[in-house]
Amino acid sequence: MIVVAGEALIDLKPVESRNGFLLSPHPGGSPYNVALSLGRLGAPVAFLGRFSTDFFGQLLRAHLQKSRVDLSYTAQGPELTTLAVVTPGAQGESFSFYAHRTADTLLNPKDLPHTLPDGAPLHFGSISLVLEPTASTLETLMRREAGRRLISLDPNVRPFLIQNKEAYKARLRSWLSQSNLVKVSQADLDWLYPGLSIEQIAREWLELGPEWVVVTLGSAGAAAFSRTCEARVEAPQITVVDTVGAGDAFMAGLLAGLNHSGFTSSTKLASLDLEQIAGLLSFATKVATLTCTRAGADPPWQEEVI
Image (cartoon, rainbow, N blue to C red; front, side, top):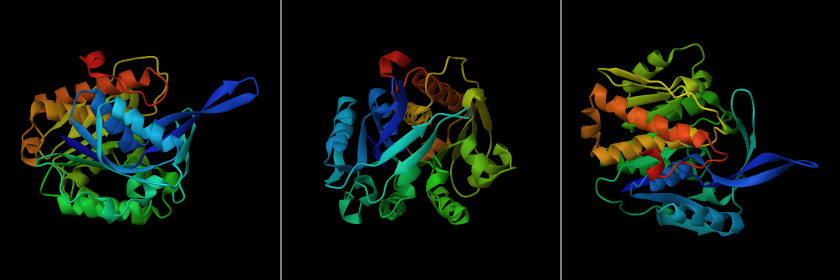
């Protein structure tokens, strides 16, 4: 079992219409997408978060259930569902969030399970680590479980929601010190540390604790760094329809590959060799590439990837 903790929201994407454009709703949220993709890839997965009881909240729950995601660790509340308006651009999509005291931002310590399955990896990421009180609640969970199980992290930085960049970077360092596997995009690193190379940042992050730091490079593929080696893979050339959810699909591909190969503890993760990590990167890149060939965060099913 892999447990994915974080936000669940609705992406509103503009589509052309006779009157200009309409906003089309799509289930989303970075951890939500990771859980969805893991379920479709055949990995046993549970989502840990909080849903609204409104129409969108029930749609989000049903969408996960259809993709074989366990909802035993979820809570519900009457608050509205978070909305994210997606704006396409030359450098990829940007997001505007409507998330003031919405359901998924109000996860409290009492909503956390007392225990999780033995050995189950636990994944965190994105705006759920920024918006309170969910952010502090998940930090409590991360501290509680660090050292007991493999912790993975994808910061998936959303500058629009970060009021104090330096405070965020300090908080990020605390997450890194408790994480075993970190995935980050080059765009995230460019915003966090302008002017520094991905190699330099990865080396600094590895000193804080992770066994592996993986950097997605868009159309250039992906790179992975450990204290002893570095691996890179190229991305296949495709016609991109939509990049929303591609990074989340990549993260799910990594976790699904680790689960399939039995590398689901920090000790086993640290033992990965160059050939094994390159294979994981290739699989994750394939999952992300297939996601980019269709609209919305619509990751592939297991039979589409093999």
